[in-house]
Structures are given as C-alpha cells and as structure tokens.
Image: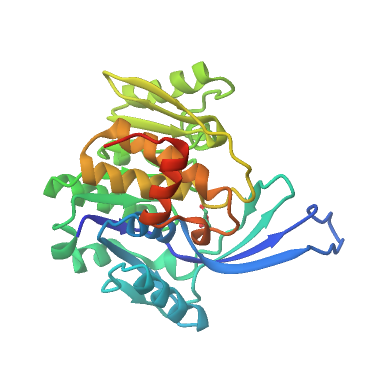
Amino acid sequence: MDIAVIGSNMVDLISYINRMPKEGETVEAPDFRMGCGGKGANQAVAAARLGSRVLMLTRVGNDMFAENTIRNFAANSISTKYVLRTEATSGVAPIFVDPDSHNSIIIVKGANAMLSPADIDEAAEDIKQCGLIVLQLEVPPETVYAAIRFGNKHGIPVLLNPAPAQPDLILDEVCGCEYFVPNESELSLLTGMPVDSLDDIRNAASALLKSGMKNVIVTLGARGVLWVNRNRDLFVPGMEVDAQDTTGAGDAFIGCFSHYLCKTGDVEYALRMANMYAADSVTKRGTQTSYATAAQFTEKLKEADGPEK
Ligand code: RIB
C-alpha cells in the first residue's frame, strides 16, 4: 500500500440553496444531491483515483448508509479491510451550497467518533507497509495523536489536515507530523494570529514552525497555497476557474498532494499538481463526484499546460 488514511467517512446531504433560512422560516432549495463524503474518505478517494494504493481505517455505522460507503470505497479500489462496523449511526453531513458556490457544513460524527487507538493497533501490520499516513480531525483526537506516534515510531511520514478546526488541539502532540496542512481559518484558530494578508499568513505559519512543525502548508482556496519550512517559503497562486461547488476542494488538494508526494518525493511538484486538481474539482458539483480520475486529470493538465514530471 502507498497511503494509509486514518479518518472519517460521512454521507453528504448537499442542498443547493438560494439563501439560508432565518430562524423559524422555511425556504425552498432548488436542488439536492446525496453522495459519499467525509474528509478522510474524500482524501482517500482522490489519491486512489489518481492511482495510489490506499488503505482506509475508518468506522461506519449499522444503518443503511454503511453498505453504500463500503461499496464506494471498493469501487474506488480502496482497501476495505479496516472499514469497521459499529453499533452507531454512520457519520452524516448536511451541506448547504449557496449561489456563489460557497458551502456551510454540519457534521454528525456518529461511528467516526468511535475510531480508537486500538483500531490502529489492529491494522498496524498493514499500516507499517505504507509510505504516508494521512489524518484529519473528524475522529477522536486521541486516535490522531496515536497515529502520529505510530508513524514516528515506524518511520512513516504523517500528514495532518487539522480540519474541522479544533481550538483544543494539543500542538505538542501534533508536532511530530511531517506535513501540517491547515486552511487559513484553521491556522488563525490554532495560532490566535491574524490571517488577513499573505504576510499575516506567513507569520502565523512561521509561528507553527517555531513551535516545532516541520512543513506547514496553508491552503488558501482560490488564492492558492503557501508552503513554509525552515529553508523554504513558496507561494503557489490559485487558478481562475468557473466555480460551481467548493465542497471537498481541500480534500481533493490533500488526496492529490499525498499521491504525488508518495510518487515523486517532490513537495513543490506535488503542491502544484494538487493546486490544479483542487481547482478542477470546484468546477463540478458534489464532493467525491467532482474528483478527476488519473486519465481525466491528465487531459486537464494538457489543456492547462500543467507541470511536467
Ligand atoms: O471537506 C468536505 C467534507 O467535510 C464533506 O464531504 C463532509 O462530509 C465533511 O466531512
């Protein structure tokens, strides 16, 4: 296996709205889609569609959503050996996408809240074969901390996407990750610093380096991405696209970055590819439904004159 994603899966219930209702008000929305989501699953699917061999350690519930989620992993060639059944509801995410393509998301973690450090022990022998561990924060923090310790113990680099933002994340516990990939609001919450300009963002990312992080990669949506470590400071500007739905674009970025990082070991190249992959994803509706396969992405790269490798 190339990548172990230890994290969440959700059922995305996406309403395309004209506006949010006020308290006590009912409004009609023009469109609705249901699909597979969850930050962990999304990142796994993006990496797998590009050709990585992905193992997913996650928990589904005992309801009608579980089978569909497992089928979806299998359909994307993701190993389901560690998709564990739980006496709980599956995770669900009601999502609202406004006419400007921006989204608001509620998550109900359900079974995801029961993914435990013991589950990592269960999958240990297979995770040890992977070249990268990818984590997010839709499962208990103890599990995330245990996964980072596991990666450090076995010499496997760890990427942590600290999403959704959690103010009580213990920075000392997560400093062991090789790649820390927040968006600007997560960066602001974790550092307590402003992120209004690129200089602000650079300062906040540098503060994380001072507290022991190795590589901080800040995703800035349509504006692009900033990567800082002790020797490098690289800003890759975003691409202009006709955005339809930004849901899951950050996950598309991380899945693609993980894929190319594992394949080439070249962080800058992986960032540039991920920037393009995420931009392509926002031109389509839905979460995983907007993620290109390797063949589709190759076509896009030709059109856009993307980076060669
Ligand atoms: O990042 C987008 C994802 O966040 C959605 O798929 C939703 O399930 C929530 O986890």
